[in-house]
Length: 151
Image (cartoon, rainbow, N blue to C red):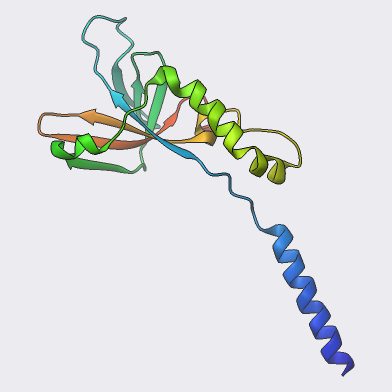
């Protein structure tokens, strides 16, 4: 009888510890950005893509940088499916970040014990870059450069 009580107490202790140790996952919003190559109307370094040792780098018209890592996920889809994606303007990213913060404030408080938000876009958004080609488009899962992406 004494052993049964000890086993039951140990079981409750393990269940309690497991409940406290579960990681709190902060949800991210998904956004889609459109890649436009440089047409000469902006400085030469905007609207460019180039490869380096980390992957494909995209310089957007608005001056933001994205990276598609070498081991990243991409899809090539028929152009007819392009209408299924709702694009976000880069100028709206900051306001979307504030909305994300307000929406996730209870989860952030629970995870960190106080009000601390991820300060980068990669902590708030799952970002896809759409590059349109002739008869298809490529959907890259990208990360915002200079925001805790690469060691």
